[in-house]
Image 1 (tube, helix red, strand yellow):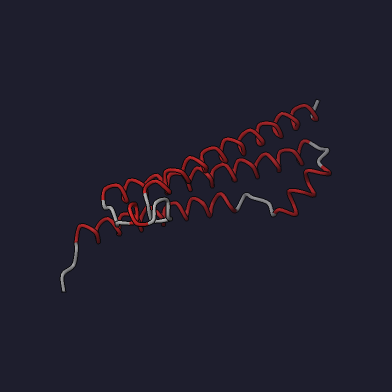
Image 2 (tube, helix red, strand yellow):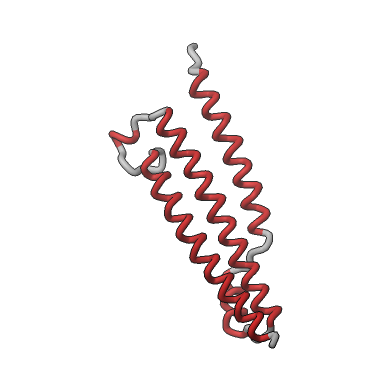
Length: 130
């Protein structure tokens, strides 16, 4: 049996990167609210504490999206270095550099939108405290 050590090492590196991203994502998720909590708090937020709770939620969401973007950028790099044949047979499938680059870009835009929401709620909290 022949083992492709170069591929195995790349796989180990990706496993470590994915684990690190998952751990960072888990920390960010601990700060997030459920969808129902966000809807309710958005509809009823009146105090600076309410707005800061929403701001922290959106900051955590942004951090999660950033972690996902970094993970997919690393995957794109690995797929570029070690092509699997999916680029030609199944363009933009989940196992291609193109897909990972596109998803990383999507995650960066989502992170920016979440940061804007966090800034808006931080501003509301400051305004409400006057």
